[in-house]
Structures are given as structure tokens and as C-alpha cells.
Amino acid sequence: MKDIFDFLAAKHDLVAAITAVAALFVSAVSIVLAIFNMTTQRTHNRKSLMPIAHVRLGDYENRIFVRLHNDGIGPMVISRVTVSKPGSKAKKQASLIAFMPDLPAGILWTTSVADLAGWALAADKDITLLMLEGDPADAKFVSARQSIRQALSELKIEVKYHDIYGTRMPRAVRDLQWFAGNVDVGGMVRRRADA
Image (tube, rainbow, N blue to C red):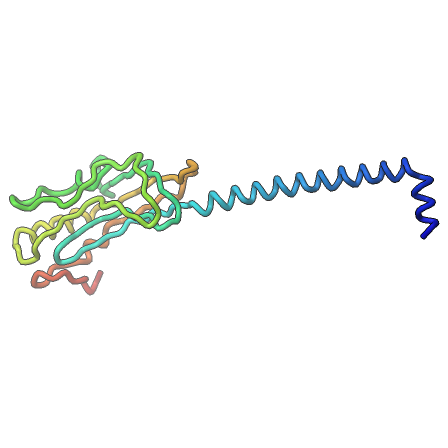
């Protein structure tokens, strides 16, 4: 052991140089690991706030609706909603109401939204794009519900959106053909067997 101490005492400058190089190497490795950790944390933070758009449909005895829901865990900022009628020369619109038939006297829309560009939607929340509610015993409401069902079944909706960091998310596209499979049977909404 005395030999080691004698060697270190005799080669003091060499030991100091080796210690300095080792300290520099450890510092460089620490910086690289810190940068890697920060990059990984930033990626995780962005992914943990990712929105997921979903167009939800409802067709019940007393109401019919189309909603935009955020199934993700981060806020969704809507860039554009486009409604189109595939196979038609009709111009694309920013809302469903533009394609809807006129309602009979005394029947009013419960909700209709014209343009959602720039709107923000919190996680696990929804925006009702179009809703009609009424009394299923009212013949005018049943007739209006059927004409709306037919009009909706011919449409397609596309939602472009991004997260709070400005990262574009995959488009949410939904064909509303689902509404064509529902029929009225004695005032009750039933799914057609062939749908």
C-alpha cells in the first residue's frame, strides 16, 4: 500500500491530469444524459396532452343529434369542420345546418352550430353540432325527424384539428350513412334488419 502512495506522491502532476480528464468525461456524459432526459420528457408531455376527435351520432324517439367529442386527454383546437354531400355537386359547408331541410311550423332546432373554426374542446367534452328534440307523439316532429334522418344520411363530416402545441392531428372523418339504417315503427326508432 505504501508503494501506491509513494507512486501517487511522485507522479502528482500525472494524477492531477488524469483526475481532470475523468471529471471532464463525467461532466460531458452528465450533459448528454440531461439533454436526452429533457427531450424524452418534452415528447412525453406532448403525447400526454393529445386530443382525439370523434363524431358521435344519436337517433332516439325524442331527439336526433350529431356531436363532436374529444376522446383524448388533452385540449383539442378545431381548425376546420367540413360537411359535404358525396356524389353531389353541392358546395362543401362549415356546418350541418346548411344541408338540413326546412322544419315544419312549430318545430325548432334545439342546437345548431354554424362554424367551429378556432373553438377549443377540453378532454372528454363534446360540442353538439346539430340537435332536434321533440315529442315522439307529435306527428310533425316525427315527420321532421324522418326528413332530417334522410338528409343526414347523405352527408359526410370531416374535422381538422390540432393540439395546444400546434401539432396537426389525424383528421376525424365520419360518413353519416348510419342514419339511413334507422326507421320509425309506431313512433319508435328501430334499426333496419338489412342496415
